[in-house]
Length: 100
Image (cartoon, rainbow, N blue to C red; front, side, top):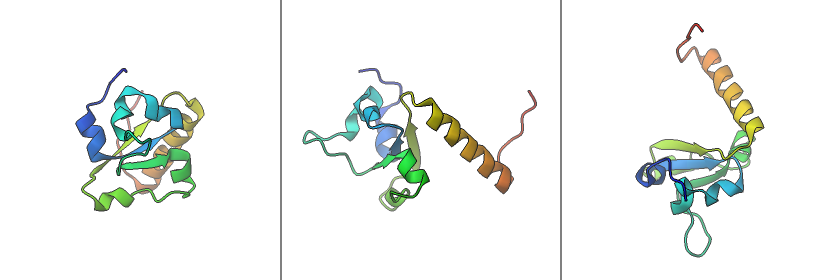
């Protein structure tokens, strides 16, 4: 399995994925238990978080201090997520503007 991110980082973050297939990649292989269940820091699909079908942020109470999003190739979700983050940053006047 290909691994791009250290398992220690994945294990300390609240994890969202774009598709269920993302759990099969090397970076997230530690999130699945031998019985097929997922570990405590796995929240679910980002689409469910965006429409509030899951309680995203619930792991913040359990010594989880970051969010990890794994996308394995659903481009439309990447675009929608980027637009959401961009719009939020503009609304809240946060971030850095870069001339290109």
